[in-house]
Length: 215
Length: 102
Image 1 (cartoon, rainbow over the protein chains, first blue to last red):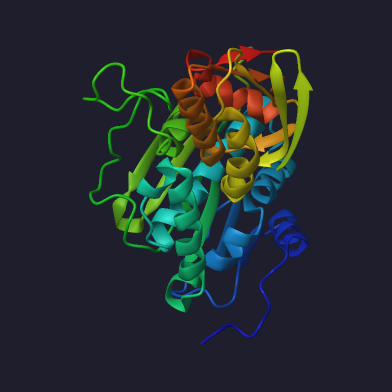
Image 2 (image 1 turned 30 degrees about the vertical axis):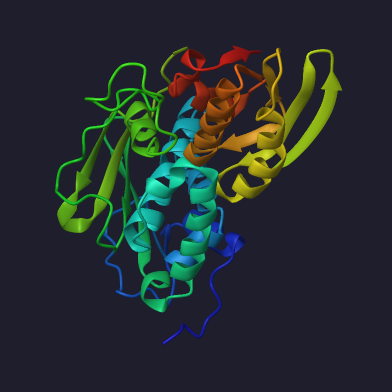
């Protein structure tokens, strides 16, 4: 069944995140998401809503409003959250692989597959959940949970390149960098630590709140 | 994403502005790649000063552009990145792959 209510708009989401409770669950999420009782922010949106909206700037703005992020930290959180959300929506809830991102022909095909996925209620209504929790002293956990089956086949975060453009381990020297699969590499570079929790399908990212001091 | 082409001494300068994310792939292919994938002695100049935001999909498109330019024996200069764009280029160590100018 389709939800009767229209999807929330940007202003409504931001207002909910700025309110004291800092929570919003979009009606029609299937399965119904479980949000933690204790969180700075907790947000659950259907895949189709999250894909269509500029969700990352809304969440980053709400975090900045609550915590007063420095400019550099704000950029880092924005970049990492965008990559985590893209992975959760594309590879998690929509169940699409990343292999199509390596060519323009592939990107065109991927767009068609995304639209097909968003027209399928089973995938379009899967929630994506974003939770922010303070991590004393002076750190922040940002968790992105999906309800798909894909992304990683096993529990551990797969080994990735140290730098987002660097060849993967085992790649012969001189091989051009792959034009896809940089999202996790970026997240690793921008977080103090990050972990994939397979049982809850959650990517948890830990950010220091202090600025790096000119780095 | 918007693209502005300006003829210059070293060839056409390609100014990309707005947001370079997955949604921009068709426009990037149609306009930017058409400029990059051409023979020429000079490197291709991509002006990013008007670019507000880029994500890993946009970085992937820059890598595809680099690949196409290299096949033509040319390099790519990325000029004028600021804010989030400058930060993500630094974190991704794109200075090892492109000539980056302020």
